Image 1 (tube, rainbow, N blue to C red):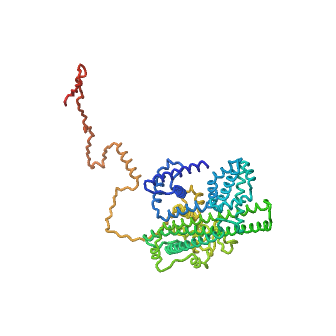
Image 2: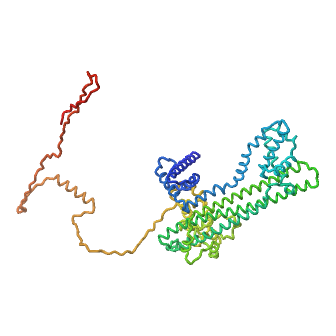
Amino acid sequence: MQNEMDVHHNIERNIVKEIMRECYPKKIYPNENFVAYFIKLLLLDPNWGVTDDFVTSRENVAKFVAFVIRKLEDKNDPKLITLEMQFYFTCNLENINNVVKKNRGEILERLVRLKNEICRVNNPDSESDVDNIMKLIVFYITLVSGLGNPMENEVYLEALAAFKSVMNEEEVKEFMGFSLANKEAHLSQLVRVVGGIRLFNKSCDLGGAQILDLPTLLDQAVYSIKEEVQAVLKKIMDKVNVLTTIVDKSYVLDQEGDHGEFKMVCKLSNEEELNIEEIKDLLIFYRQCELFIRRVLEELQNIEDHSNDIYEGFQLTLKEIFQIVNVKIAVPARMVFPLFEVLSNKWTELQNQVMLLTRYSKIITNLIGFSKNVNFNKEQMDSILESTGPHTDAQRLQETANLRIKSLNPEVEVTKLQNFPNIDDIYLQYLGFCSWKLVKTKGGLIPGNPSMGVATYKKMNFVFSVPQACLEFSRNPEELVHEVLHLGRKKPHLINFLLIKGQLEGVADVAELTKVKGHVKLTQDKKIQTKYISRSKIDRNYYWNVWDLKRQALQLANLSKRKTVSTQTHKSHFINTVNTQTYEMRDKEIQTKKDNYTNVPKPSTFIFGLRGRRDDKQFTIDLTRPV
C-alpha cells in the first residue's frame, strides 16, 4: 500500500514538473504547490486514464497536461480563482496555529548567537567581564520577552534593575559555572521571572518603559477588523443574493410521467444558458468567500473571548502578588517568583493573540484581492433580474417555512427539526444546500430549508428547498449521492467546498458513477408525404433465401455431371429432333511483358606522371569508352 502511494506521488510530481516546464514558454507562472493541489483534485476522476504506469498512459498524460495548462491560462476564470482561494486558505487558515510557534522559533533563532555568547563564558576574569555578561543577559531577556528595545537607555536600566533583584554579581559568577544545559534552562526561567517583575512594576506605575497596553490595543484592533470583515461580508452577500435569485428563477419545476415525477427545466435560450453556467461558477466563488469570511469572524470572536479570559487571569495573578508583597520588606523568592512566571506567561499569550490577529487581518486583505479578480457585471445581473429584486436567504426560508417534506422510501427517514436534541450539532450534507437542485441544475447552489424537515439516509442528513425535491430524492437516494460525486469530478472547485473529497477518494477506482438513462418511445405520430407513386415490379426469379440459391447451385452442379441421351417410342415418333452443337475450349497464349537490358561502359581512368617524373605535374586521363 505504501509503495502504491509512493508511485502515485511520483507520478503527480512528474506531472507537476511537466506542467511548470510547459507553462514557462507561455509566460504563465503559477505556484508549483497550487498546481499540485489542482491536479490532485482532477486525478480523483479515474476517467483521465492517468495510471501508475506513466509510460503506457503517456497519451492520456499529455491530454491531461494540456487541459491543466488551458485552465491556468484563463486567469480571470471564476473556477480557477475559487481553486486558488481554497488553496490559499488551506495553507494559511488551517495551519494558523503554527504561526505562533513559527514566530517564536524565528525570534529564538535570531538570538542564538547572543545566547551562545552568554553560555560559552565559564569563568569571568574580572569585574568588567561580569558586567559585560550581565549586560548580554539583560539584552537577551528583554528581546525574548518582547518588552521594549534594550538599546534604549530607559528600557535597559529598568530591565537591569529587575534582573539585579533576582541575581547579584556573585550569583552571576555561579551561573557562569553551570553546564550548558543548566545555563539554557536558567536563562529561560530568568526571561519569565524578570519579565513578570517588569509587568508588575508597570501595574504599580514604577516603570514599564515601551511596554504596550496590549489588552486595550487588542480590543480596539478586534473591533476594527470585525467591522471591516462585516462590511466585506455584506458586499459579498449582496452579490450572493443576486446570483442565487438568477439561478433559482432560471429553472422551473415540471411534472411528467404517470407517476408524477418532477424535473428541473431551464427556461433560458441557448445563449442565455452559456451565461447561466458562468453565473453558477460566480455563485460558487462568492459562496466560498462567504464561508471563509464567516470562519474568520468566528476566529476573531474566539480571539476576543480568549484575550478577555487571559486578561482576567492576568489581573487575578497581579492581585495575588499584591496580597503577598503588600506592606512587606522582604518576600521569599519561592513564594513570589512562580507568580511572576505566571504573569509573564499570561502576557506572552496576549502577544500570541496579537500575532494571530495580524495574520487574520492579512487573510482578509488577500480575500478582498481574490474578489477583485472576478468580473461581476452588476448592470448585466440587474438586467437579467428585470423588475424583480434579489431574494435573501431569509426570505426563501420564510416562503417555505410552513411546508413539510415527505418520503416515498422507507430507507429515507424524515424528521422534524424540533425533534433533534441539539440543532447546532446536526451536520447537513453539502453545507445545507438542496442536493436535488444541485444535481438537476448542474451546480446551482440553492439553500435548503431545515424547517420543512431533515431527510436522513444512511446516517447522512439532507435538506431541500422545495417538498418536490425530497420526493424525487427518496425515489433513488443512492443515485443522487453518486450524481453529486460525478458533479464534483466535472467541477473540481466544488470538491472542497461541498466537503466531498473523502467520498471521491473512496470511489477513485469507479469510472462511471451514474448511468445515462435512455428514454424509450413506444409510439410516435409522424406525417409523411410521397412525391410520386412507383409502379410495382415483381421478379419471379428473385430468391430472398440464401438456401434457395445454394440449392439451385447444387442442381446445376449435378447437371454438369450427367449425360444426355435420346429415346423414341411409338407414341412419340412425331417429336422433332433438336440438334445442338458445342465448341471445345482451346488454348491461346498472350504475351504482355517484354524483358530487355542495356549495357553502359565501365568507367576507366589513368593517372599520368606517377612514376619517373621529378616535378609535380601529374594529370588524369579519362579512358572510358563513349556510349
